[in-house]
Image (cartoon, rainbow, N blue to C red; front, top):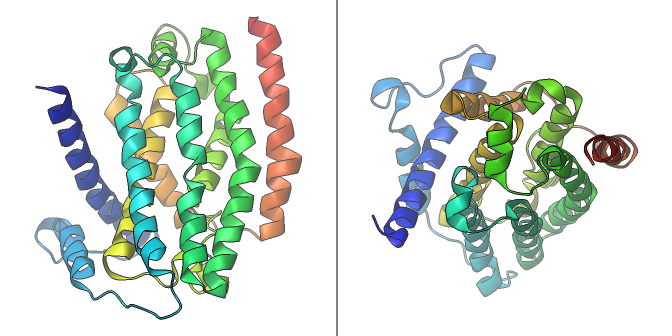
Amino acid sequence: MSFWTNKFFLIIMILISVAFITLLERKILAYIQIRKGPNKNFFIGFFQPFNDALKLFSKENLNLTWLNTMIFYTAPFFSLFLMLFIWLSINPLHSYNNNLLNDFLFLLLLSSMSVYPIIIMGWASNSKFSSLGSFRNVAQTISYETSFAFIALSFFIPINSLNFLFLSKFQNKSISFLFSMTFLCLYWLVTILAENNRTPFDFAESESELVSGFNTEYGSINFAIIFMAEYGNIIFYSYLTSIMLTSEFFFPIKLMFFMSTILWIRGTLPRFRYDNLMLLAWKNILPFSIMFFWLIFFIFM
């Protein structure tokens, strides 16, 4: 198949996966709360995500007078575009075909841009709650971006490369980083949750304080697009974590494990206080990640 046909099918599979990860999350949360979740729509609620999408896409968009209309309606699509662009640009298991030997640097560039759609959405809404949600997201992203980079670079030092494929091949021949660098892997999971605004770090939405945060004014297709981008990123970072922390063996099982863990945490942990979020970033994770980075650097160099 041609290059563009492959990319087209990848996009279709990502969007279908996004539909079913929402069903998986609802099932996990339901069993945590001792109930069944969606189970009436075909077999175990199989078509529920498509019904939800049809309902959202058929809703009317409200043209509120205080919105910066053009920017307000295009910002969610920018968020979805960034998510798909990350998938299309970086495929860790096929890095040789990408001719992109510094995969991680390109990922760092794209992931740092994910904050911009949320800033734009909050600003274009002209709402106090939306603005506060976007301001929180900026501070949170800046706080955890540095730790994210140091922790990830610590995994790349032993292989002397920034290529994901080399990282995976290295672990095929030795012990996985998940077992040899367990504490660092736990910090990696925390930074992934913070980067994706997932519980217990979902301060950009924080519905108990800010109604719904940066997406308060959104509905219909725009609301659906925002969460398609969020869940697409969850799948990507679960995929990335499986590559970075473990070998290639039993890859689908490990992918499902990391993805389910991110979803399961939402039903288990309460949201932090915002000051605790900042203290965790600057006084705990960042010093530890820098120390671990230099320790691994001196051991392997």
